Amino acid sequence: MKNTVLPLLLLLIAPIAVFSQTIDIPRQGFSIQLTKGWEQTEVLENNRPISVLEAVRSEERGDFMTVLVQPTKDPVPAKDRVKTWGAEMAEALDIVKYKCTLKNINGVSWYVFEGKMQDESQVVLYNTVQHYQGYGFTFVSIKQYKGLAKEAKAMMQTVKFSRPGSFDEIGRAFQQFHTDDRTQLKAPQGYRFDTKVPEKETPAYVASTYRSLFKNKSTDAVLVIDNYFLLPFAINVVTDREAMDTLSMGLASRVAARQFEQSQIPYEEISIGPWPKAPVQVYLFQFRLNRPEGPTIHFIYYVNRGTRLDILKVQMPNGMERDFLPAIERWVLANLE
Image (cartoon, rainbow, N blue to C red):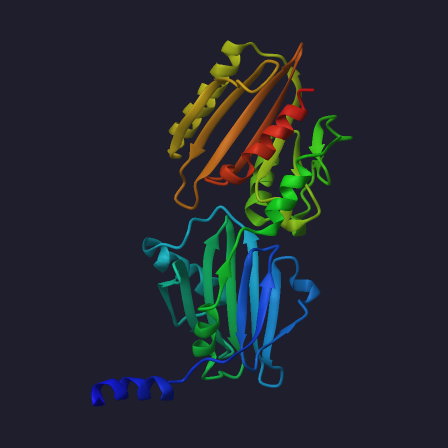
């Protein structure tokens, strides 16, 4: 009898986290429960659009939480990246002493970072990648609240992920198209082709890709939209070039592949040849670049229009094609009408 009662008594006296509020953010695909004493607040305008949730425990004490979400090509947290990721965070936050570990919470791998900033503020950061989006849950205590790490851990145990609602918004936008003024190509509803990148409304890795394309003069225009979470991939176009025959398009694809190999970029060919879904002559070059910082998949459509050629180029995190390839193909087909 004693052996049965003792464990029950221990369970009764063990501290149990008390939750006061469940926050559901369906557009970014997650929910979290706040422990007692924490309260959701309005996201500061300067922190938008990346910050999607903010909360405070006590304004007087200076304890607060923020959740940053951004489309990314970064890989899921892994053991061989813990040291590097921790060092990058420490440098970004100007922290000398810190601890960074990899933890599995309810089947999700997280980088967990704990340290103190130069002003002695305590920082606890949880970071993961789900659905090609980076999630950073940051807890800060300006006056070193001793229960911060414990309460952060309790709240993180309640985090649940789901397919982001923004993905459905993108799918709907890629069902209706309009003629873009700049390129005369079809663009999805709400999107446009531009020669300038709206930095605040463009995810960092997409903006970086676009800047590189313009710097190398390898594009005429890039697809943009003034809505941060509706551009998780990069699309750019080259228009009104001289038409090419099948042999020339295949040669151009092989030359590009050779350049990747010479640059020692891990290159994997998927397909090169006529695109069978096209009612007219379209040549598709599809490949994958397996960079350690995040693999990407690429689709290059060569569209012959009599004497001229348009090139439609798509890049996205590897695996994202399972969500968006049907939408991309609808866009390509719309440009063949």
